[in-house]
Image (cartoon, rainbow, N blue to C red; front, side, top):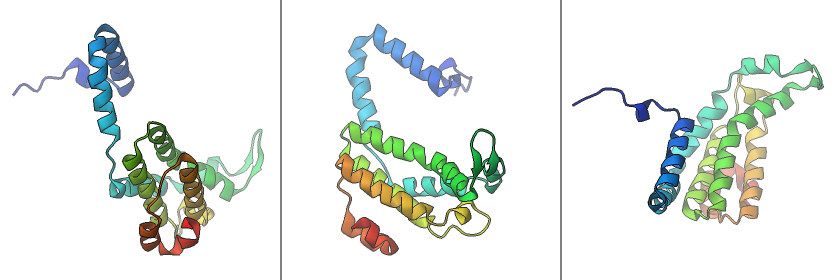
Length: 177
């Protein structure tokens, strides 16, 4: 088997997107199959994997990041450590929420439900922050963002499996309605 590096294999994601766009302009007959493959790719989601990714993203942020974000900040004045922790944690969670919104706009209901449930499960696992984490400075972060997600899901028309979620997230039954 030949294991030489290829130009396509060496491209960054952005460069691959440029190649794909160029290829689709040159060969419009490939647009429909490419669109079908993209929809197929985005239609599948695993709530357990998403939950793990959310936990990793939130708990993976270094508490040392507070040093540069909390306290007196030029142009902002004093920033409370809890507020700074919220901002840092939001940066970790935002890609998941953006993905949810993007897929909801495409009407990918089953994947959107799995993604939303996965995010909620991940947030639930982060509800008891613990010492030496950013969640220590923002103890209500997970519950507040879960409530925001439930509200956003309603606005996007996402039918969350509320009975199932009440069983999986018993401490958040009030959030789930």
